[in-house]
Image (cartoon, rainbow, N blue to C red; front, side, top):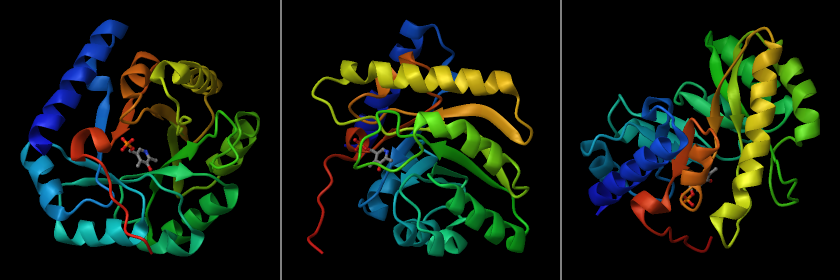
Length: 231
Ligand SMILES: *Cc1c(COP(=O)(O)O)cnc(C)c1O
């Protein structure tokens, strides 16, 4: 199942790249494995997947310990400052930096461990109350502040688009973030390499690719529906 789904998603990524005239090598698929057991991750791994996304620190740490070392773990969920310490040396990229305070905490822990931590700034493009992230209007000043932190390296931007009936409705959201991304690239801020744009999930990754995404985060489309226990 996982293998077939992964193949299907990869084919759709190729098709979206073709439509958009993009090189498929510019797009990385992150298999979002949150709530899913190691056995399913292993199946995706056997089928060639190496980039996996998790949204909870504890779950990421457990899976990091249990699964092959060459997996690239992406932290994609809201990160509490008191958990930064546990996760910074287990993830290749934190997609969800949503405040200056969080970035400063990452700086502090990264300096202690003598690491440079790659991050994306999460932008709440649609300004939804329920979502984390910087508003577009405040992102540039936050980016400049965070860029001054020597152990934190901004690599780009991330957004979670609204939940919509038809994925096409999110095209303007992706377009807007992409425009801002290109604008930031042209400003060439010191200590920032603006070359990653993380946008698109199961419902809308093809549109996100057409609009310039370089990282897509697909969970359900690979691993099936998630069931949450009542806690
Ligand atoms: C869960 C999650 C995804 C994957 O969602 P699907 O709709 O299952 O593909 C992507 N990004 C973030 C930040 C998530 O939390």
